Image (cartoon, rainbow, N blue to C red; front, side, top):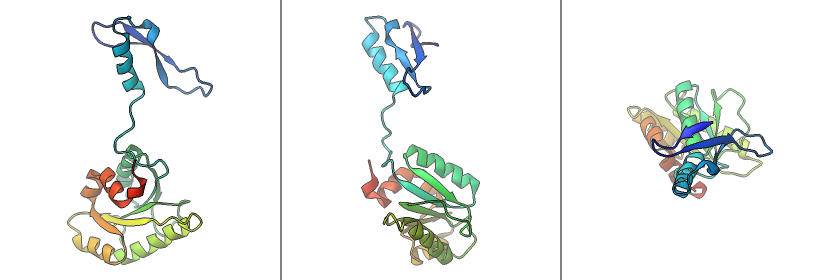
Length: 187
């Protein structure tokens, strides 16, 4: 494969890596670089092919349970979890069999779940506690919903949720909220 590095620089050959795993990562063939531009261009290529770790990444073993039947919320939060280097499991209904834990955080979608917030929090906490029993982890339980549903958010907090935030706050400041809720998991 050939890719121009800029309009005046020489082409750089990108080739599949030759590791025994047969992965599809590409490496730069620096032999195609001119001697005068090689070092600067190699650093540029390395930053593209091997990007630095994300600043908002958290510990690799962070496991989050999302309790929501809403596919849109699930998709958006899954993307945020990938950016934060966290693993996401979903539970569409509190009557479904739960995914295998343990979990560090449970996110409860109060808008998508029709039950009373007290019931949602109690059932979710029992699911997370049962999944974490062998591991001994203590999971945070956080409810979220629309900012106009302040009463439901307050009811969830009163029912034992560790925190309750608006959907906009959750989606807009996910990495910061993870650091706030799980300070020992930060990068």
